[in-house]
Image (tube, rainbow, N blue to C red; front, side, top):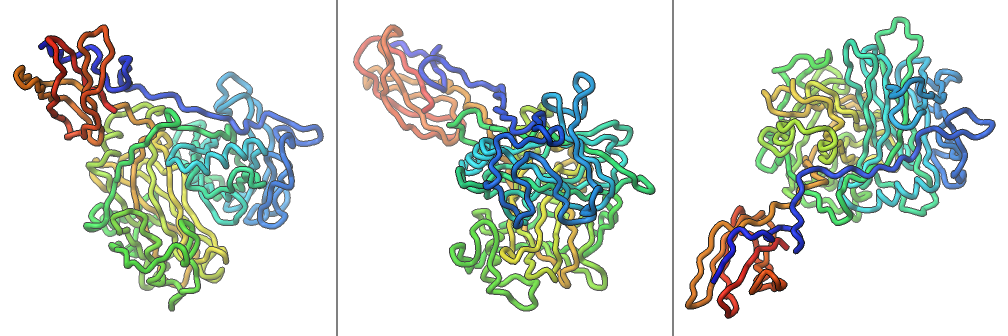
Length: 553
């Protein structure tokens, strides 16, 4: 009996010798708006083509839903007429740094600093359908809604935060955040990205266009302040999956069930961070589920809890709803209480860090992968924001994040809303290519995330939660082809014992052919993996010669 040990056709995918591929596929990108269109009688860069005004609703009648971009200064410090200007910018040179796709971008000029709701972007009927369909897919981390913001002279900003109202609600679902300040740089770009299944957008053909209401909050070194301009463009939908059959791989990063050792209070090791004070206000603890929360009756599932179980004092969560904060199947979450006797508990400062030492994230970062490959890894976690029972409890709470060397290009926030006044959940999601640098965090050389908090006075401690830290690979490499490493044949019993390299979680088949001129047939199927190697024994058909191969199912 002739047994072929390392068979020419012993490949892991298919019968035609398709090898596993290590290179990363190109993302599929659909440009939704590059602000190159214009409509007669309207400012350049704006258009009414493809819009149905009846499909857009936002905060009563304040939305302008018959055009792709317009002023929206209903709230904040730039609500006075003329304090914000929007104009079309056209590239003046090849590879113009203020344009990332095509030849145009929108120039947003601020004539007053501080906070303000500034402008809105509305997607056309067709593009709204594409985004809503993607959001309804339920495929984790597959679709990313992105746009680019380009800063001229970023070193003039002491901070720059950007938040977005999305859909038809005043609740902030945030894309945007703090721009890293780079000395001696002439321009800087960050690409805001949001994982669509986490948005809760209307379903396709719902009759509602996708709307982004963009608010900005910033300070500069100008004294007195005169003006500054950012450039916005390349609104796009990105599909990160290699194919419709891609199965993403999820790597847990922090598990709090056995304690909160992954989380470290920055105080008193660190006194300041980015020039902001670090105090003893943050208290970290483990929260374990109590089994009282009922998603069907205690709020809007995955969004917020109800307020009819309000406990006294009002800023403490009722036991019936606190389980809402736990989204990991281990039944635990990190609880943070901001309480500092004799001083404000609500100012902007860094409170704690979460280390990712020894995780898949640390492994990926150590490989120094190029940006296109990093774009296929999504870092995400669930944040449960504090209860806000009325406008008197404070109208905002913001979270920003840093690696120690770079601020993440997105923030999280909530706003007072009488329909969502209980605990409120946001899923934070960022692709690794958006994070400019890692290091500098108080976790030795290991990658870590620093958590900042800022809010209006609540009149008591803020209590919020973090759970389900994970890294998602949306373009996992195909498993290596199985390789037969040993074989033993008994000619009397015609039994062949085989051992081959394997991947955890895979199933295998043993195939046989009497000659290489005839097709292989299956001897045994659905053999579960034994880990790095798998062994089995098969009985071969009668005959003096034959060939076997291992196939990953």
